[in-house]
Image (tube, rainbow, N blue to C red):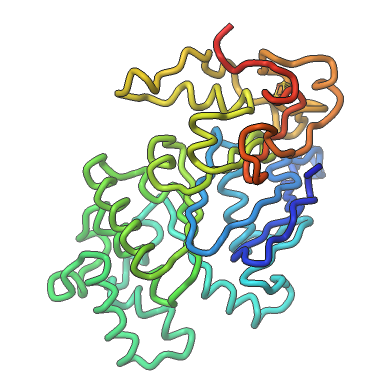
Length: 346
Ligand code: SF4
């Protein structure tokens, strides 16, 4: 059995996340006391292998972005362990944390607010290396190399300000800035979601090329399931702060075993008639994360829910009979292979 918190820590993993938890306090009343807790991320476990792209999907509020911020230590976890490149990350060790942050970088959705509007973009890109002790001359040379690497002509762009660039150009600058400290892992949090479709395709192709050329590893977070399928080697599905399914992209998209994954994918637009599904899409909103349902958190929206689902939480277990190597895990009592239930339409 591979229950929550019991994933094997594969030696070769670049990033290992174990039992990660973050609850945000909800305050109220005239004394502003804590009256509840939003269970944003609850006992999340996964690995990221060097050179792979792990896609993370789920509805808004499922904990994707909070997980990313916890990995980057932009917010502090309540519990859990993160291991990067074989070393445990210790939030209290400032020097070690600074080095980890150098090797893990993040690109956000809002390309404009990620840049300092008062600085020419060359200075923005030089800032990180300068903070890490690189000379001004070397940092300037590196900035020009990075401009070329992300497809921007240094002679045209380097002294421009963020407001003088298009959204796609600004996101290229953000990618260049993220690469300035030669990271191993990039966390792309809805990084192409605000771009026009044609520009989005260009930036996705740029990311694929950079990954190949620089040997990068990505965590790719998006609400766009087509884009995640195009980019990812493996996909992790989150629901209400929990991982409900994880596996190779082809397994998740073609042989999903969790009813939530199935419903999520059924809403995915496709031009290919063979790819269309009759599975009913999700109905209703996710439950309140301050007071999530007991047992399986999906049971209030699941058409397969049984008594057991309402009081016993399912652990992540190998999707029997599909991926013999155990790379496909699902948190559902009624896994297809286990119970014979079908994700085909009623
Ligand atoms: Fe549905 Fe039960 Fe599986 Fe949860 S454990 S997804 S409620 S069948």
